[in-house]
Image (cartoon, rainbow, N blue to C red):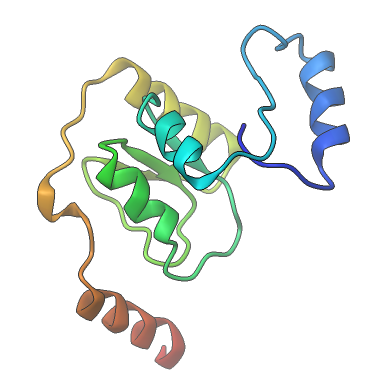
Length: 126
């Protein structure tokens, strides 16, 4: 997990309780360049936020060729390279799928600004 904040102590405790010290590492804050380097090594991008607007991190994951698992937030939409889930179980199932399945990210996967604006209008007018 890249990043740092107020949840770190809770995450350390949870990782210990679940015995996941060998599987989950809390890397902490990294430079933007280092984040992209780490992303390029990932097999799946898991985004668990309850709210997101455009979510450039989604575009960054797609540019790195990483399939996405997220909740239905912001620009998120179900595609062969993007699975949506609402529950922890849904998200875990989707992560397992991408861990076991080779997935191509088409070049057109990244949204153009025009499409982003259309999605914003849908959110705010609907």
